[in-house]
Length: 559
Image (cartoon, rainbow, N blue to C red):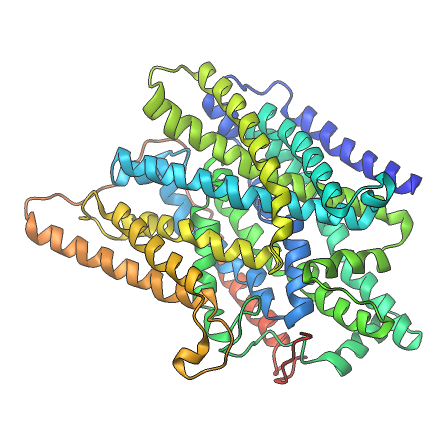
């Protein structure tokens, strides 16, 4: 236990020291320096920060919990992020950097009007405060409780231990996000990203070694052989069309799942802010495409360990009642004690990264889109940085109060987060992409789409209709089907509004995006080759985990 604590503290301090020296002397007194790292991030740092912003214990615990329950189909959340990163590199990034924006609501305001900007800023901030950041805090606390057994050490309940850990994570994470600005967050993300790739990729090999040893005294190869021979149904990523969450029905894989990914990678402020801080378009594209490659291999530590855990638990008789317990329980069984501290530090870095990124993004939106625009337009640069820090502290306290409450959602963290986040995120995707596609939209369009989506998608979540309504099984209709229907419908509505407005006002001029000259917009010359290579990589991975590879059509669920 002592060595675990020493190695954990050592790696955590190393990240802090590197972040300090890399940001020492940076100008944090201006809004661009504080919120956009002075528009100076290189591609490698962008890729690392994008990866770590997306990856937290919520995914390590939640995604592997899903695959423990239903097999490999949830790997779509990782692999299908890659084409969305391609869209970010080739479509979104050039347009964002051309406008020189700092936030996504700012772009929506430029395309529509100020009140629309305010609507979306408020909703984005509320979503982060009550859903996204609390889930990050809870999932990180759950991992540490299971690894270190804090409740046993302190003599408290598991829930009380989660409360204590949420406070600790929030305090340490706030130091980066509030007092270090985006540059400190991005640098720490990159260092933690290296540790994550080492630690995360070691997990499936350690798990296969234990599985092979438990099954027949073998090692990694024997473990993989046992998994394929006895649980090939769980290795199939193609789930039936009538599957319920957390499984991913096959018709939604390259449809609803891609739409879900587009809103995350192309319009979510926490992710996009890294690209907005790029030195130039070339570095932004390099970062996004490198992140796409890293997301594909993410299935090895975000999906495969869950299936290995299922096989291992059946062999050794381990019983768990919640899918969010699967990954932490397996970690305790497979990670050698000398490595536990390093692994805990890597997990801690992933938790901090997502917390930092979301906190930094809502600080940015509140300060620039609400405070500067509507509360105190005369505020100078130093005042905006100061208010950003003060509001960040307030937001951190609020999310720390909400975080432990996620404990009472038995359906699983990942399903809860992904289904609810689309309530606000999809209208943002419609407003941004529709705003680029259609040049004659009325100013009220984005507001109308927002209300339309909240009413219909919110009704879907509340009603939870069954497949039996359409002659199928008895399970609840997957939320990705709702996404698959609603986004094209919203784009059609926007097309009709665009056409009608053009006919109604023939003299109306088409909207033209202005180049403000924020950065050099010369694209990376190898972007096309890289994109094609990434798409081929996706095809290989999916074919491997299908009935044409090591999976079988038989499909089972433990419950």
